[in-house]
Length: 80
Image (cartoon, rainbow, N blue to C red; front, side):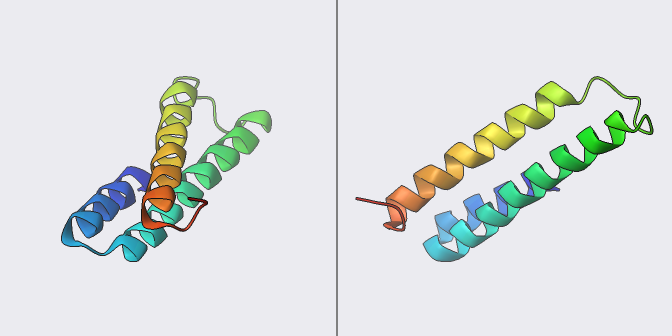
């Protein structure tokens, strides 16, 4: 779901809606971090045995964080 929100944010930005794109991208970042945290918690409790999800989900979270930061800088939300 997080990468789908990221793609929607790209289309919003391409359409000229920078602040809406930032909001959707921030939601994607929150979704990605939440999923990562919930999966780690379930894995620690032993109810989520899959071990092949950590690297792709962490990479997705890092890419979404970088994209959110760059978009915030581009739109003037963060420093300038």
